[in-house]
Image (cartoon, rainbow, N blue to C red; front, side, top):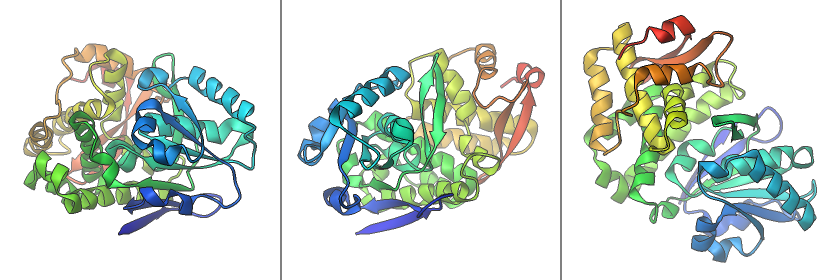
Length: 343
């Protein structure tokens, strides 16, 4: 059984996000007559080599240290040596780092090839591979170089999550909670009434959460594909999260997002846009799932890093502030206001 969510694109047919039992039917989503090359990492290749070895493939390193222009340059060289041209098709098969890199390479190699994703982690299925943001880090800053370009398809098969380490699974749940806080109160409340084991072992519950999270993102991206306004809401918690990630390597992305959202909930309560009780509800959900809610990093250090965020505009930074559970808005904070933040 499968379900499809479409995201409109500026040019061409909609990008299709396919949720369900799809991993064994990859061929049916590939364009006929085109040479296919898969970009993946060694870990994913080891698990799914029976599928990947049917095609040409390139391997990249694992972790944020691989998300660089050096990796992109390496892939350009390999694609040239393989004779890949503008009639070819690229598939990013893996987690968010793989799909970010594969999408960027596909968007820039020979001025752009068509591409699709097979999302192998929960975070990739609900966030990283959906919506058309592709890119790499630069000078220690997250996703400083990249493109807006949506894949032809994203395949999200939940069977790929069965072997996902618990830490990675929980990190993916943080992005689903984020979607609920942005625009789906019922989705957030699923996490108040269910625990980690429920989401890990109840496939129907997990699919409902994934579907709802993707729908939130798809609806926003359809309206604002290139982050001119509304799409900024998808950065809830990410401004602090990126500062945390630049300051320490202690947390993986979804963990940093959890901390960042808790910080934003506290800030929103201080601003009076939500109640202290609502801010506590947010923290309680992440705590129940075993996700971190505090980075241990001095706030002054984080606010200093905030001023280098790629989303800054002149001497201000946009923050996504909570206006309730399932409602948020974007507000601009000047550097002076950022310096005065206390949580």
